[in-house]
Amino acid sequence: MDFLQNLMQRFIKPAIIINATCLALIAIYIAIMLPTFNIGFYERQFIRNDTHSRINIEPEDLTVVTRHLLDYMRGRHNALQIRAYIAGEEVDFFTERAVLHMVDVQNLFTGGRIIFNISLGLFFITLGLIVHKKQYARLGKTIRNTSLITAAFFALIAIIALVSFDFAFEWFHHIFFFNDLWMKHWDDTLLNMVPTPFFISISIRIGLILTGFLTIMLIGGELLRWRFTQNTGGD
Image 1 (cartoon, rainbow, N blue to C red):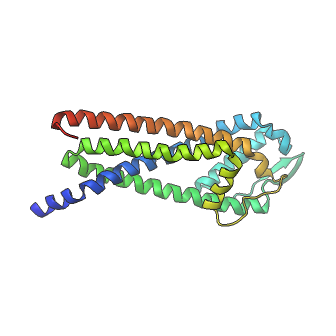
Image 2 (cartoon, rainbow, N blue to C red):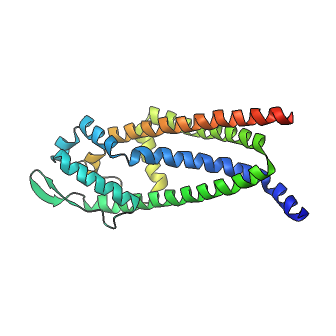
Image 3 (cartoon, one colour):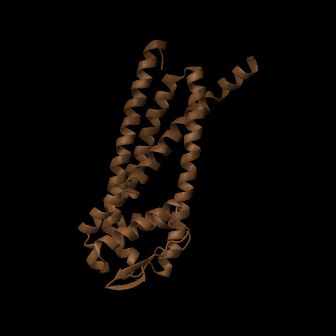
């Protein structure tokens, strides 16, 4: 029993760090997923960017294509290609390069889902140890600091994007993709479906949602630290 207690005491600090880090990763994942898979967001962007006229497709048909695309990104379809009426003619909606690129995108989301599931599991496992050892003040302090570090990191990205969104967008693709399939011709249907203004809008939406989550983490962590520091008389 003493050995087990000593072992838990030794791992309490790493457990607190892992717990706060996993909480930040969970917040990032949810902030990305909420607008990315919101069909209403896409439809509003299509109207704003005059996407239907650019592609020469009816709004209802574009919604069908978008739902299919989002389901593919979730892994619910094995194939991306879908037939649609463009300029009154039924054709394959996506180009070959777009299909190949979206395989990489699907893999990226699959990897993100795996990281989310692992983070969720580790969060609850470490939380159990933290609750058992009653290390609430230390947890609160670490959550507060983690939220600040995460906010600073994404603030830096936001500043870079404000200076040159194209530069940030290009380097994002260089980091996460190992080919040039994301570089498409101006008349590519996928490029016209989600042009640069779309990515600017979704980046802002993700940033706002993440800011909300990090603010909750910051306030919650500080309240937790303050509440249980008062009880123990220390930090």
